[in-house]
Length: 429
Image (cartoon, rainbow, N blue to C red):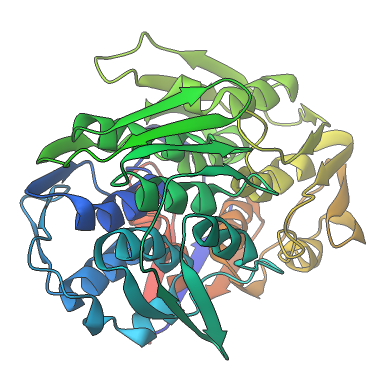
């Protein structure tokens, strides 16, 4: 089923909006439930397509997994069977790669189609293969099929050649059951990696995060039933913050973890965006009040580069290109990792942006410019959310085709924006 979103631009937004649970935390937590001997209860689970697909993948493995309320999942994987993976679902989502670690740890042998997902350029799995091989796995890639087996897994010292989030998560999940100490150096420490560690430690594991991107997994302890609340999604906050700054008058974004969003908040303030934070609640979350810029004014141009956490997150770069169109002067945005992070820029140019792609990793945007509605296409998740943000400030009507991609990572974004004054129509074809 294809989705088309039609946006009537120029509406000023006002009111409260709460960010959903972190997509990039939810999918590994669902996957690692395969290692828990008992019931897992996850709360604040985002109801998005990637989560629905991961649920179906686990159901296909004979895992009992059900919703108990609108945002709560109960999972019991004690009867799981590794021979029942749905190849089509695996191919549809990049996060299915997170099954490699749990399947290896539990079954020692499995076969997996190469995971799919958004087109963001070259995203090879060699870092995963190399790390799991160091634990004792034998990995054979036949065409687009991955066959993994291990006679015995052993803890070891692993140095990652890149700060790969999913490779770090897979190593943690594969090694948590091994007696002894597995060390990851050059580990990714993004908020959702830290949340996976917190979840496993609550289930009985002993995993320690040290400075300089080093993680120690003291494995071999049986993992018991656990309840965990998923924190708010930093990438959704970045998108909503840009929308509030460019299309809003006075908006309150709720459910934000400041420690997960420090660099995004810093860049917003450096561009001149008015951000006021409330006191944190018992979950460490705050409400961020953002006052949109007055008519005839503009923000300040900026430079940003995607870096491993605590640097600026790669997923937040896309919506910041819209902020750059409303900032006076020349902004430079650089993503050294993904060749297709800037794939939406030609559509922004069609809408009126003055943007120049220097190479596949860098774009210069000169503002301030008026955007105009166009018929465009969502090429990946963050590009879709970004073009929706552009449509909200464009003059006239913007139509986004293939908008179902947006649903992979944003929970009912159009519905929630309509509740604060947007005019977005959804058509399913």
